[in-house]
Image 1: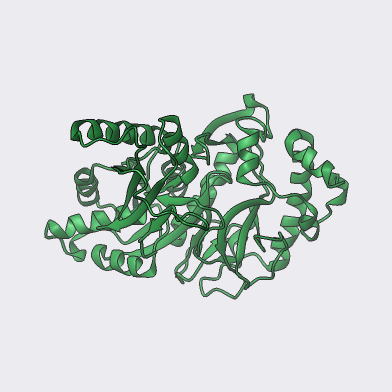
Image 2: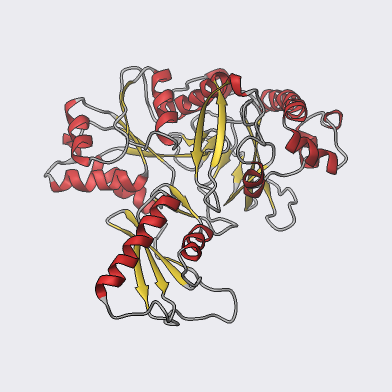
Length: 433
């Protein structure tokens, strides 16, 4: 039997959902107009006032927000509530080292946790379950979001955070964890480790997993399900909007339901900005309907996907999105962390290296690897291995400070990286995702 956390909303009729979105959009546009001068200016440039927005049919009139806007407005330029009313920030990396900083009122957090609670309930979670949260905590939204959602469902919550795999497995077994929340690559690693320990799926108490923050294939899903003896569910979110729980998979496992009472989803042509009909592949755009501290309107995610309103066997009526099928920018997601080539360029230039480099991304034993080949200048070039090793370590440290993760750096001879007459091929991504 399908379970719902908030059945009256999750199974509302299309008419009820649209009426709620119309009402909330009108209020949100006025809230942003009155409280976010940065966006008000963008509206004024288009000759708009809140009086021009009467329903979701008028959404297409409003200007977009992009990652570039977040960079320009950092840190407080898109704040929609007094700082004294904000109780938390969450953050993720930005394109140039400046981080995306999202603000939350207590009400924002409560609504975000409701969204995560819906995801846990859709995965079969109840107050009789033990939910192990193995996403990172701190500034990353994964841990805090699912932690709060687990509390709302009433699960016994184990906030292990990421890493320390032996301890993770100990808690899963000793405390009979039934739901695991983490990145898919880490779930696969936990599963492989358990297999090496001689544990079979019937000796593992887990029944479900909620995995997100990075791309993963259907083949990887089946492998995780087989190794851990669970049903593996996808979850989608962005720090800019709140975090995980913007959309989640149900028992049908063929797309993620978007929480339409909190977010309006559009698909646009990434070149023209034209709104495309459901069923057409394009760039995903979100409008926050209920968030007050950081209320983004028509935010371009750069994720490419398709929306579908086909009736779902789970009974939920909210629109579904496919797994993202790529991106319109050059962002990579590596071990759940946003990585931009421009960040790497910043580190290289600051340390005196030419911007001739190549990023090699792969997935080994279900864990993302990041190798960066960097050309030395003729002045740097040497056969002194001690000096090369020291230089490589210095770059590893600089990149870790910029990216928030460890990369392998290999210094190579001047002009040894192939030049291109067209657009340079900076990234070679060998992952099958």
